[in-house]
Image 1: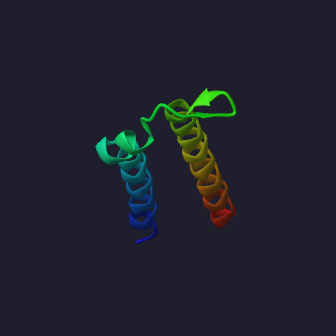
Image 2 (image 1 turned 135 degrees about the vertical axis):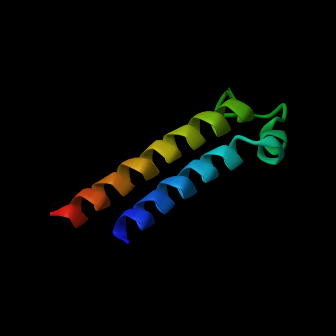
Length: 68
């Protein structure tokens, strides 16, 4: 049963990543607006990418602690 929960979390993280890079969110952040000298769209992509990697990293840390 524990293996099913782990697979569900991976699927949820994947779906969140796909949703963030999909139509409604891309259009919201695709504006001619600069934040700290960088276009808002590129900041959205790079910050979202960094957050998703951080979430996966934290998830794997908790998963390794559960196995010990």
